[in-house]
Amino acid sequence: MSDLVLVLNSGSSSIKYQLLQAVSSQVLASGLVEKVGESHGGRIVHEAGPAKLEYDGAIPDHRAGLLRVFEMFRETGLDLATIGIGAVGHRVVHGGEVFWEPTLITDDVLRAIDDLSVLAPLHNPANVVGIESTRELLPGVPEVAVFDTAFFHTMPDAAKTYAIDAKLAAAHGIRKYGFHGTSHQYVSEQAARFLGKPTEELNQIVFHLGNGASASSIRGGVAIDTSMGMTPLEGLVMGTRPGDLDPGITPYLMRAAELDVSQVEQLLNRGSGLKGLSGVNDFRELQQLIDGGDSQAKLAYDVYIHRLRRYLGAYLVELGRVDDIIFTAGVGENSPAVRADALAGLQALGIDIDPTRNETRAPGIRRISPDHAAVTVLVVPTNEELAIARAAYRLVSTR
Image (cartoon, rainbow, N blue to C red; front, side, top):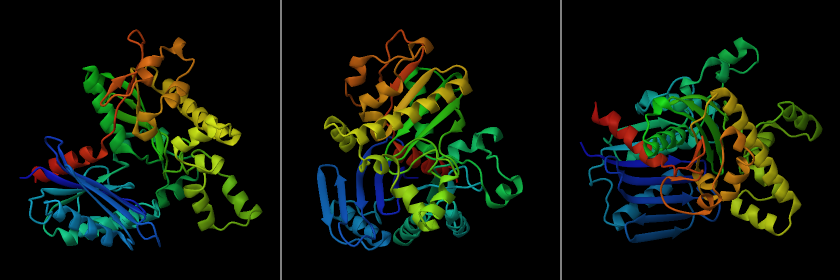
């Protein structure tokens, strides 16, 4: 069968996509659809080899965005309906307690993903629309769901259980699920290959630091803990999400500030984290504010680093021995300051960063710790699209 896979990541107001060959990892085309469903500012950037197409205009919904994307594929000589796609791989954020492996999408699976929207109201509905659209536009092509929560299915009960009423938790699926699992698994495996060791021999800590951020501890290739919880709100400070928060703050805000449930959800998902503290959620803009002497931006940065170090300490104790620490995603791959500050002063624990290596930008995996350090610190570019493509191809090719 063809190893050509269309990978789709449908967000609440965006669509990221790639067309790639799962075996060789060659990317034939990629693009981003932004501001889906918004009244203005819709934009699509599509790249296929040397060709680059752009669209600015209204994108009323995900289906309309995908129709425009399919047209752009045809304009660049890649008609998705005729080039022989072997599978479509969908990133699905929440698999709940139902899905923890790549899953061939049927009508029943699609309904189950939709039902799980109660656990991920900003993400799963958009995933469902993306799946429905490609099923219509590419009839007969196998579609595979790859779940963000899957890698963390292995967490022990002590790590995934919340200390609330057990019957209530069981009735409503309340437990830690974790997210960004595809990225955590991919970079941990890439790190093992780089080090020339089997994953079974390694204890690893991964920091996936983008606008959304999460940490994980991995023993022998198996995830034993992660920072995100039942939803992507828990854990590290993020671009617009607060991470760990006293649960009493929510009812307090509802009483004292007279916020309703939807307003609290909006605050926690869109108006907190770095943006809530400093007014910006882009790390480049945050650094500009800090350089300009903005004390609130500096506080936001300090809170961000404090939370990283707190999770690092917890996972060091949890694992007992750590072989490598991995930084990945937009901030993790591109901010030397974050990496240096997160690991500062830990030489006694065998953790150190070489300043020159840390500041040097280069493609691919790179070591930023000194050669003599007991713990190897790595920057590993993530590639969730390739991981999803390979998972989809493996499943479909063995049918």
